[in-house]
Length: 475
Image (spheres, rainbow, N blue to C red):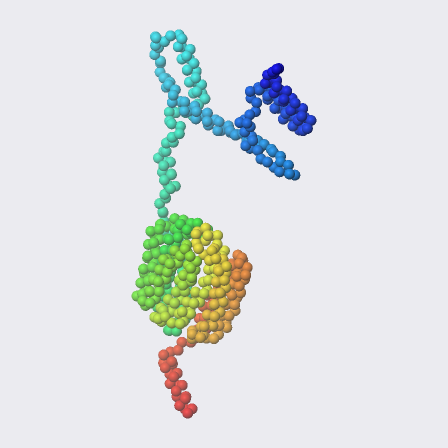
């Protein structure tokens, strides 16, 4: 039986495969030639199953119920020149410690060295010189370890200065810092509402008591706002609205801020308690506690913080009433109700455009977690202002002209709240917020101008006697 070598047999098979491929699929001519040339060049390197690694990178595409396979070429790793140069330097640096030190002085001659060892010494010297030239300017110039950086004293001081900087307070900047720490605009609004409560009380006006009550209320508000900022420093730094506060920017130290809060809170509560009356002092201390220990932590826990904050805002007019009368009355509760209901359209409209900021700071506000409730509550309490204005003459606080003259502004803020409820966009929220800024002063001013005239005790006692005399004469 005639036997042919494997190479010839494989060649014949490859030639027949080539002819069939050329007849059926002309586009595979180049592929067939490549396979035959690969086999003829070295039959031992014929493609085996293990060598077809590209099969792992194939994907199958279905087109017209036919399967076509395409091999995705593997991307060759690209090495940049910088990486190759750095690797060569590292390899040469690692080989440097194994090189014998070069003696700069005269080398003593050894008599036992034969002529056969001289070529080897010359070769080693040439290798050392070549290595020195290749790493010149890197490791052969200095004896320092290349991967260890020695920090100088100046660099260390600069690094520590970047990490910790002592707070330096300029005395000329303290008034502005204290004003921002106390939220002077909010404090002015609190004092205004307390003054309105004092003026609406049915008692003679005492300027000294009025001034002391306003001063004590303002100091208590400054203390509450300062402690609030002290607690919220890490959260205020995440909000664009509060990132420029004094404690966040490091203009004063936390100890300085707490000292300022104590310097305002203790004298403020003492003035209200000793110079006015204990009830007003108790309300001032209660307001500080509610704002700092209840409202501030609740802002990160529950949306009930808005209702607690409304109670805090409703207390100052009650403090003004108690400072004048020394007791709580229906008029004090009505004035507190005005402030309580007014705060919902005011704050909900404000927080609507600050939802991103509150969310970034981690505060749970109605506008963030319950946007539908935020709009409904604003509308509900805007309409409640109309009802509260109607109760003022019923409680003998104002005349009946107050509900009539306050109806336009109450209807206007209710209309804006309704638009905010329907649209829920930034424009409607902004209009409602700016309306609330002038609505409250206007409402209190109208109530003050419509205040019911105060009756003297003698006149109040004479009215029943005159009525009885009139009835007797008629009989």
